[in-house]
Length: 243
Image 1 (spheres, rainbow, N blue to C red):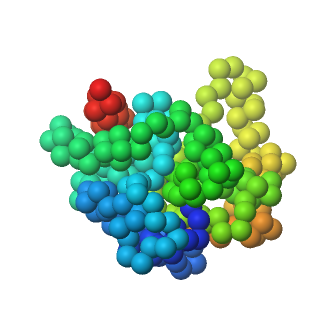
Image 2: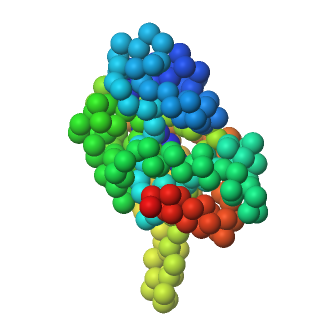
């Protein structure tokens, strides 16, 4: 999971201590949660002349009641809000729920899939969506298709999670397709062209190099998601907050 943003926003967040630029851009989730807790608006950031708007600093996500990417966002936020510990048990769930709920409620309307906010990011610009929660594959795919504009920036949340796409075969033909997706060189190449990290890392590396996408080659700061039951409880709690 990654965050799509713009150079002026990245520069502002760097001054605010949220972003950092090394080999790739990183986004400090703990520092971000501090800003959210204080209801910090963009126009309250020091020396902000690039994006002086009167709305809260928030990452745009999808609807947590219907979207996997939003669930991944919730998993990361709950981990950080719980003192960098995976949420386990009723007490921990109650502790983090107020924090993670406002990350979604304060956004207003949210789409059901990440295609919605990412499409706005590509077409409308930072006025509507200065920070967008997406899959890494979406950004790489857009780069491969020539859809990115100068100044568009890819950030890796710290920590992040890895969302794996799973195929469930229902018969022998489906099983064969699944095996081909995992082993066939041509399908591996096509997967990489669409931004996915396949079982052949060289293909993904080639695509990102060809299109000048600075990606993290070795994802290290990765956390596990809570158990299925805990994540469902958290998602249910956020859903109730909508009223």
